[in-house]
Image (cartoon, rainbow, N blue to C red; front, top):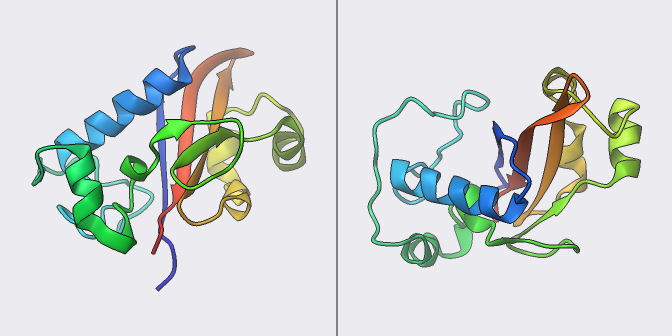
Length: 149
C-alpha cells in the first residue's frame, strides 16, 4: 500500500513549532487520525473536518504507538519542525522549490490549491510547511505530508 497524502491550512503565526503542536492537538482531539479513523483523508481534499470526534486514545503518543507501522496517516506523525528532512519532521519548503512551483517565494492560497506538486518532494513519514501570502503579507501556514504506509 502507498503512503497517504494530507495537508492543512491554518491561520499564520510566527512561531511555526507552536502552530504545528496546536494543529496536532486539534486533530488528536477531533479523532482525525488512524486508528481512531483508519483513513482520515479518504475524501481528500475535503479533509473530513466536519466529522464528530472519534478520539480513542489518552494521548498523541498512545495513538502513534497504536498505529504501529502504518502511522496515524495525519499530522500527528509530524513531531517537530526541523531544518533537515527526517522521519516525523516538518521542514520549510525551500525558496528554490517555491520559485520552481509558483514563480515566487510568496505563494497564495489559490496558487497552492492549483499546484500541489510539492508532494513530489516529500518522502513517506515526512512533512513540509509553506508560509502562504495574501496581499504580500503572511496569512496562513500550509502543513503537508505523506503517511508511512
